[in-house]
Image 1 (cartoon, one colour):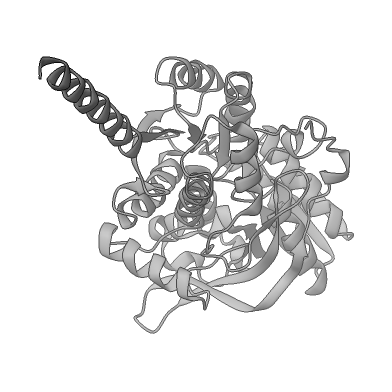
Image 2: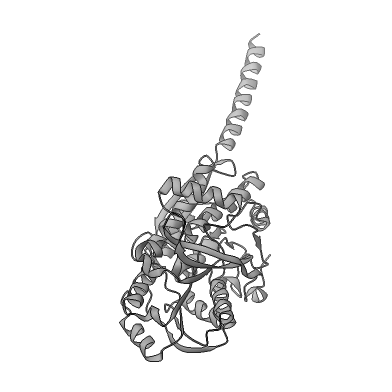
Amino acid sequence: MLQHSSRLLRNTLIASAALLALSVHAQSTVKVGLLSTLSGPGAGLGVDIRDGFQLAVKLAGGKLGGQAAEVIVADDQASPDVGRQTADRLVKRDKVDFMTGVVFSNVMLAVGAPTFQSQTFYISANAGPSQFAGEQCNPFFFSASYQNDNMHEAAGQVVADKGFKRVAVIAPNYPAGKDAITGFKRFYKGEVASEALPALNQLNFGTEIAQLRATKPDAVYIFLPGGMGINFIKQFVGAGLSKDMTLFGPGFSGDEDVIKAVGEPMLGMFNTSQWAHDMDNAANKKFVTEFEKEYGRLPTMYAAQGFDAAQLMDSAVRDTKGKLTDKAAVRKALMAAKFNSVRGEFKFNTNQFPIQNYYLRVVSKDAKGRVTNRMLGGPVLKNHSDAYASSCKMPG
C-alpha cells in the first residue's frame, strides 16, 4: 500500500510539473523594445509611431501572435549616442524579442550595431537608410515602412509630370536628407535652381527663404520632418512665396501632424506617400476609425507604419507558434509578411524592404471642413522597388 501511494504521489508530481510547464509556455511573453524620439522637435513623429503600435497590440487583446505582449517604451532623444546605449540595454538587460520605433536614420544606423550583434530582429516603423537597403543589409533588419529615397522618387516623378522646369530642393544635413535629394533627382531631370542642407532640427529658415527669393524657382521641394516642416511652411507662406512657387514634399512634410500645426496655409501643398487615411480598403478603414476613437485625431503615416510594424511582428509570432529562439523560422515568417497591411498589398524585396505603391496626396478641406490630406487617383509609382536592392548580398 505504501509503495502504491508513493508511486501515485510521484505520478501526480510528474503530471503537475508537466501541466506547470505547459502553463508557463502558454503564458510566455513577447517583449518589444519600442525606442523612438519622444522629446524635442521630432517628438510628434515618435509619439505617432508609439500610438499606432500600441493600438495594434490593444486591438489584439494585449497580445502579439496570441501571446501576451510587453512593450518597453524608451526615448532616444533623436541622439545616435542615446539610441545606441538604450538599444544595448534593451537587447542585453531586458532581452527583448524585437526592436522597433526609431524615427531618424542617423539614430537607426547607431542602433543597428547592438541590435544585429545580439541577433534581435529590428522591424522599422520609419527609418529606411540606404546603407541598410544596400551593402550593409542585414538578415535581422526588416522595413515595415519604406526606403528613404522612395517617397522623394515619387515626388520627383510628379514634379516632372506636372512640367515644372526649375525646382529648389531643401533637406536636412543628415543621412535621410541626403537620401531625399538623391531620390528626388533620380526621377526629376529638370533644373535644380538651388539646393540647401540646413542642420537637422533647425527651426529658422531666413537664409533658405532669402535664397528662394534670389533664385525664383517655379516649385520648391522640401523634406523637413517634424518641427522643421511646420516652421518652414509657416515662414514660406508668411513670406508670400506660396503665391509664385508650388510647394511639394514627401508624406513626412505634409502629414496630419504638420497640417494640424500649420492649418489653412498648407492648402494646395502636394505630397507623396505609400499610405493615406482615405485609402479604400477594409484594414485601413478599421485602423483609421479605431485610431480616431482611441486618440481623438487623424493618424499620420508614422502611426500607420507603427500599426503595420506590430502586425508584422504579430504574424511572425503566430506563424512560428511563439518559438522566437528559432531565428531562421522567425525570419522566414517575417519575410512571408502574412498580415493585412493598412496600405493594401505588402511584400518584401530580397533586401527585406517593401515593394509597394506610392501615391500623390494634396492638402485640402474634407466634407467635415477639416484641413487634411486627400489622395489623388492611382499610384504614381506602382510595385516600386528601391534602388539599392541589387547591392544587397544578404547573408544566409
